[in-house]
Structures are given as C-alpha cells and as structure tokens.
Amino acid sequence: MIHVRIKKEPSGRISAFEMDGHANFAEHGQDLVCAGASAVSFGVVNAITQLTSIEPDIEQGSDGGYLRVSFPATEQDAEVQLLLQAMIISLQTIELDYADFIKLSFDK
Image 1 (spheres, rainbow, N blue to C red):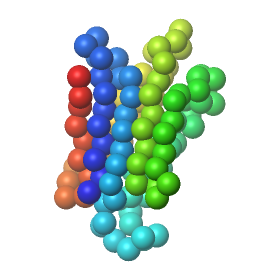
Image 2: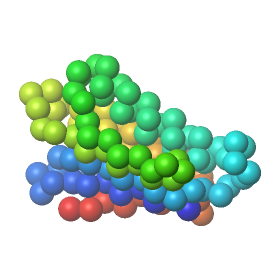
Image 3: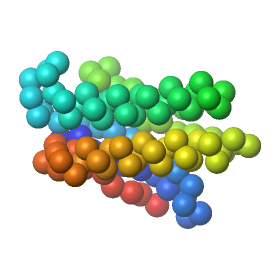
Image 4: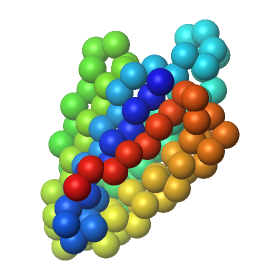
C-alpha cells in the first residue's frame, strides 16, 4: 500500500508530504495506482519548481518506494499551497477508487 502523509502546521499551511510503499495493484510497470500517485506527486513538485522558482527539499529512496518533499515558507507561499492542495485533491480522487492500495493521512 502507498501511504501518503501530509504535514500541516497549526495554521493549516502544508509544509511537507511523504509517500512510501508500493500499491501492489498490478505487476511492476503495469500498476496504475502507483503510476497515478507518482505522476501527481512528481508533477506538482515540478510545477512548483518551474512556476515559483522555489526549490523544495527532496528526499528519495533508491528503490522508488519513498519520497519526502518539504517546502520553505516564501513570498510565493500562496501559489505553492494552491498547487499542494490540488495534489491532495488528485490523490484523494485516486484513494476513492483504490482505497485498498493508497491511503492519505494528515499530520499536525
């Protein structure tokens, strides 16, 4: 199962997210849940980097089963937060149909 943990500050600001595990929905290379979650998360990180010029702190596991990204507060934080909220909505949409393979949680 893919576990996605969204780290929120007391103010509600999203400061980081972490993904780990494997969906095991299908064989490697055929796993739609893994591909969808990866595309959404990497797409948002790339969008943040290109649209805001912010360089988030990124940690990746060597086997592709771990990603942690944290975001510094900057003057462009509103744009970053909007993109992160879009990522959450997309991942929750995947979770609705594939709840046995992906789980989102929110840490404060």
